[in-house]
Image 1 (cartoon, rainbow, N blue to C red):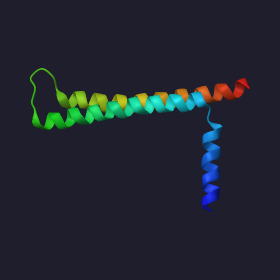
Image 2: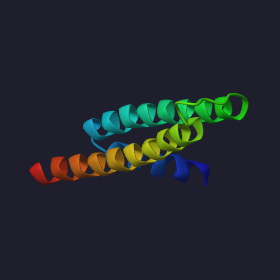
Image 3: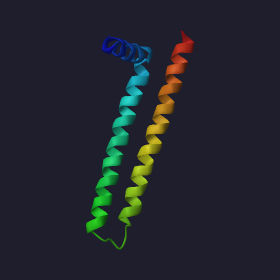
Length: 88
């Protein structure tokens, strides 16, 4: 049973093109870094009040943009994978 799961996982990852894997890796890293920055600004907003910058809005913007960037990167990876398969 476990061997079948490993084979299916390996088969799935082998079906994805290398460019798509690289796109997903880079976009995931960017998304994680932006989410961590957003969390940092949110925690900072709990203890620090600024007259010029609303830290909660800044944190919300970073978190939302990290999700948007990940979704766009996922779409780009799917598109690149599709185009590489149709090219061959």
